[in-house]
Length: 258
Image (tube, rainbow, N blue to C red; front, top):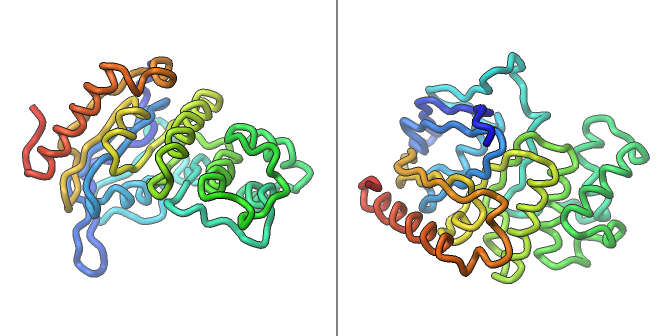
């Protein structure tokens, strides 16, 4: 397993203008090839961590660094999937996926192959000409993921993208996401409230305390080759769910997993 650190957060503290301290003493290394889930209660700063990594906000104190790189601006290496698909309703699926490439100066004709590849990764190759209003909620989220994948990100940030979906759709998108990670060999940082989702998807689970958020436990998941198929009904999956649930319970009680 590649253990090179991609992004490092060191003693990060984030205080908003209204005086709310979202994060305090937050330390975390994101490693190349990780599927790292942030698991914690509402309001504990999980989304803030993603925004800090993406450079959309700055820490009040502490550092967010990309070790081994002299480039201070890594936004071009990042894809971001928000809780809502945020698609352009007047544009078809292909043009929605083209958007981040278009903003980088890539023409529609130059982007055609990349758009097709991205849609194929999420199983929407037959819907390029459809409009968001013609798609289900799960399909709209697939378009959002394809749009983020179109830039071939080194790091994909995902903020509870499946929270509003039914269980069957969620399970299918979980599998599609794992397959996309294997295809693109990217690193994923994933925010979730679900013990079960974090146990299924993750190579690592970082459990956060209630606000101000900090890491109170880290759980090692299984390799990507072990996930899929019968994994959801396996003893290994049940044990990961138990560990994550216990860590979350300890977090809420102000303790640490021992």
